[in-house]
Length: 506
Image (cartoon, rainbow, N blue to C red):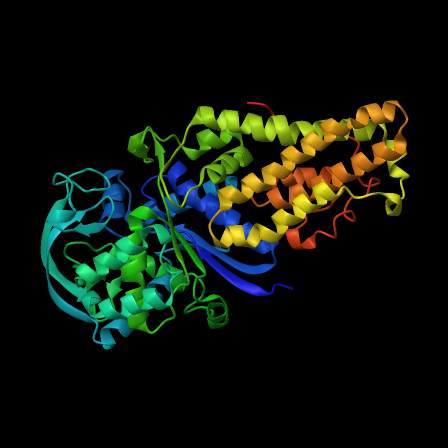
């Protein structure tokens, strides 16, 4: 039985182009976190999806000669297929053009309006269509968007505004009472900016300027600003209107994983909106750095190839492993194909994969000796037992602290330890010299440790570890909480007599 709920979200992505390494970076890490939580017996809801309104999508569809709805339908399917290839195990893929999302946006905006937090005025300023974001002159970099380094548009239009300024003291109090909410690295920066200047924000556009959006419930001549629409996917995505039981079970989010460029929206505007609507606030916003190619944030224009290219070239598990091993909540990280190759060869092919091949070859050769072994006579290797138990006991803490990379490093230390144990004991020599009692002990501890490694690595490389579990005689992969006491998981009679190659050397 699951004992605790865990609601995790990614940002929803603009489907103007297919997903790339940058969007995969966030989504794979979120998937790995969700899978670890499930393996530790949490009741997990994992939400991702596509952000389908706004000027950016509207212009891209028209440029390609599509009806806008047909365009986003086509693009959303590309995202779903790509996430399926990457083995993303989301609970729901939400689209902001879905009816229940539109109704949720209208209902929340109506609540905010009725609470007196929305008023009509005029907006005049700078706007970047690429990031669908308003900027002040001091935000710009040489009069360009600071994110995309492209020209911005100057707008003047009638608009509805959200009284964000009225939530200054409430936000500061919330940050103080809930220190885990803000990402540690950006905490002082956000608090200082809120204290310094918190301006009301434009939340609509007149329909005559942009029709492609959700009409405001109190003025049909205006559509909701795309970011206000998008943020509310986290509410509609778990059944705010369609399934009240599901919503009350999972709300509020436990972990919202985002890139550092959308920090202000999620740590300031988002909680203020929820306060206005009378909803509980998320527990934690966790921001990470960009994944870069040649020092530039990954984008189609920055030289990023399609995800299909990387999946076909390296394989899904290898790509997932590399992205997670590179993950950092503190800094940008460079995507490098040569580093991917060397990391794969050193850690997966030469270490884990090579050990599996050698161990199974030895098992197949001396199968008859091993299958008739009585397990109660076997001696547990305390060093290996203690190593896997230490990782298991600390796994949840690593995940909670967003130390996914560090958790994988700890697991790989066990893999290296297992390799060293196997090399030091030389079971092939023990068998050849008919020292069967010691030979059986080494093989037993080696395979028992391998079961634990497979359970610990399954959330990261599910395809390969599913195969390994099958080779080890299990019908399906074991969750971490399903592992029995060390020494009671392996059964020599169920192991397959094969010589598997889990990871080909690149």
